[in-house]
Amino acid sequence: MSVKEYSNGEVTIVWEASKCLHAGICVQKLPSVYNPSERPWIKAEKASTQAIIDQVFACPSGALSIKGNQPTKIAREDDGKKGRFAIYENGILAGEMTYTWAGEKKFIIDHTGVEPGFERKGYGKKMVYAAVNYAKDNGLYIIPLCPFAKAEFEKNATLGNVLK
Ligand code: SF4
Image 1: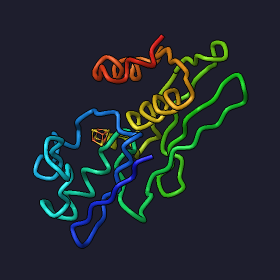
Image 2 (image 1 turned 120 degrees about the vertical axis):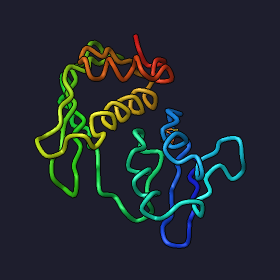
Image 3 (image 1 turned 90 degrees about the horizontal axis):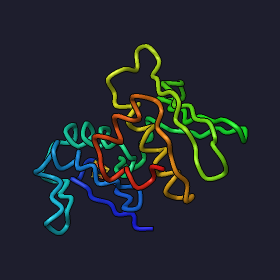
Image 4 (image 1 turned 135 degrees about the vertical axis):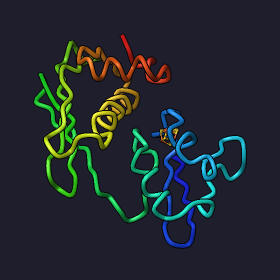
């Protein structure tokens, strides 16, 4: 697994290639730092520390993180029939995406929601991407019945290879 680090002297960006779903949000938000056609493709010294932190937080897949700082955590809980991806901010439950198994190789995303006070932070998107990475890592397929998750799949064609 390729994990690389890029520092601007104050803050260090960690990039895990295997988690990147190539949504391109990093390139859109901070083109001075992220340029996939150059090497290195991340030049942390080209932006302020705050701009870097804001952008890393917007990476939906978790491929980008700040070294030593894990303000959000996504945990998967499963009872064999149903489960959820729960997102925590500094240890507090901030949202959940629930799913139901449909056979051994498929699960249905039935609901995505964030708790009051945690809206507009991209947490719903992060949970969809966590589910996609989980499916990719385990050879599974997703049926997104939840309208929010369905819309994310429609917006980003690269997620589609886990649809069945
Ligand atoms: S925003 Fe995250 S998932 Fe999207 S291309 Fe950049 S690193 Fe990859």
